[in-house]
Length: 461
Image 1 (cartoon, helix red, strand yellow):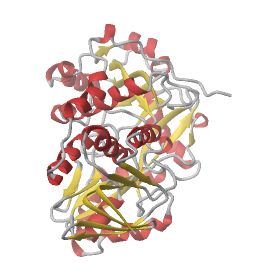
Image 2: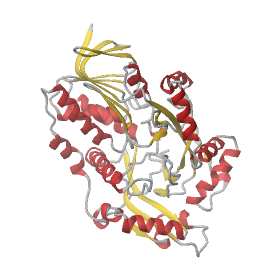
Image 3: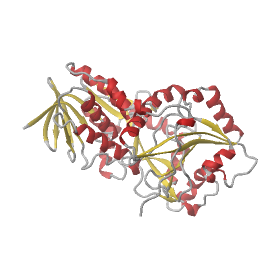
Image 4: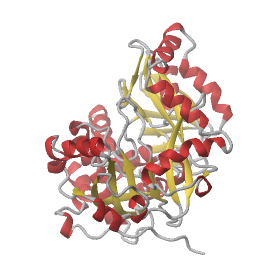
């Protein structure tokens, strides 16, 4: 028996779940299936222990240009609006203070220029510059122990959405399944091959053969592997980067970012209270290059070798990237962070940038935390591509690293839905209704009427 659909989505993380929700609720596509290899939705990178739990608006991410911040802001507001509408009891998210911290004259000057001259203050009306005394009121541990004469400044906002992306993924899937006549969800079902046919696509899966007119692969690192098996993206490779965290007691009330190191595609170290357990402060992420596509799953080494390619261009690309005078020391330092005892001593200065009084005994490496974020390598240019990686064919889309994928999941879904219905021709997408259910619920106004940020919730006994 062959299961036939208009659209099949491969991957049940936040990206695949967002697309399923958007197609099921806001188009008249008659049949769509989501296929996830794990037994549960959002079991890998979207699980709350495997990501930064941050909804990135671009306001405190100092590696973003103004242009990128404008694009990310709309996507983040879509997801924030969805959460405001469906999660009034804050089971899937919390809203807390967040800030990016500058310490010393040089950093303060850089942050002032960003806010006043580069346009970030205009783009984010709730973002406010604050000094030492105001920082101390919001985050006492950030100021405690610092030299009194050291200049300090932060850009702070109450729009600090802390998100359990796994729970959000399940919420989106459940909302889509309300359209029971048109939606099927398969978990514990691996896709072995996808073949293009004159009629569309055939999927060989654990649940038998599926056929569809259109296909979207949103399987994280595996998306490029599947794409290359189908003849797409042959000039690309992956640099898989595993992120980890160190844990401490409740040092912080919200999120505190530090300024981004230039030329690095990875987030600067920051501290924040866990989304579900306010008695835990997480510091990170670290960023270690690994030869696997999933954290801690050695069986995915062979998957990595598939996308690495083992050809001259791949080796030259890796050599060129890792020889960079900024990136190479960074990679080496992050390898050291994994060493017993030595690692946390090496990482401690990063924590002390946020909490100066932290001691080596205050932090421990988090066990079971962290996911793999694939960085795209352009083997024709021998360079690291720090932007979004998306491949498209005739009726097929491969989302590899939409960046930042979780924060802009609904915006990416909106974009892909337009492409899907255009390809299918006979269907329509009600974007107005989609926006009404998402971004129209985002609370606007200045900081005075935006509502107070919540304290970090304590873990229930």
